[in-house]
Length: 410
Image (tube, rainbow, N blue to C red; front, side, top):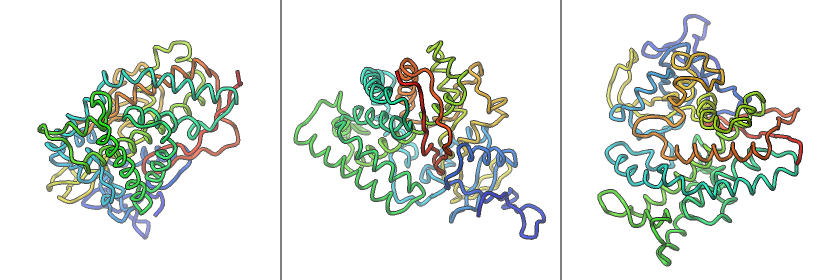
């Protein structure tokens, strides 16, 4: 239906649904770089809650920071039985995302140990070494497509090592993940890629059973010997957990890197801040994650009739909790499109969500981004976007499709 806000067919009063404005914006489609943010900003200022009828299954859009923050912490009302408002009947199931407390709490307690700050710290030598190896390959050329030649490669290698899997499987895992996200709104291709990933992990589980490994350092062995209430996870749960982790981890980190390097290539004065003072890197990461939110929405299913800040929602309704529009809400972040390392609420963005479903891999993501910014700018401090290229971003869950960078080869 395009990108037009709801109006009547004869151009009269705006359409409403249960008293809330209707919009038709389809957020699943590819757009020019940053195009989605402009639409989100306009709709957020239209109303705190909207009804979007652009898909086969219309949904509520909660658009402002305070309301999104509140709803994310109410799983008893907004259930994770649905996690994607754009496709509430996804054939692919994810764990632990599709669970609600207390089942979700029990599974997260087990998984949190593997992705704790202490556990992530053990990966730093590998992250730094692998980052340096990739840079050594790229630097002499004086150019690269950052997205395909660096942005996806490093997160894949890190996740394989974190899960105790061989690095030579990197290219195949990337292919499966790309297929899943190219069919993010559903379809046979996504289902096929998910099943291929699960079969890959099934083969790895069989290998662990033939040759047991130390569960203290091998993730699959850890899951084979650990689970809620002292009982190990069954195989189907392990396969779904692993498929979920590698899918979510690869795409989101690749996407974050793309937008961060787009910004730093576009604003050399901001890049110079971290070149001159690498101690600013953690703060820069927080502000850039807020400024370029990757996750447009967290989908939820309404469990009971409720009046949510004046919007009458009914049991069975699907809700879009607007992570991206919340991160750019001027009510929470004054002058939200300005890069500002002195914001007092710098870490209060929703880039990793909030509440029981806060991102499991947030410590790994922050650490990985920090190492990349440190290592890259120590070797390639000056770079720019190659002229003459139209930059575009994928819909549904944002990522740059390409980012051609150039620099003077050393």
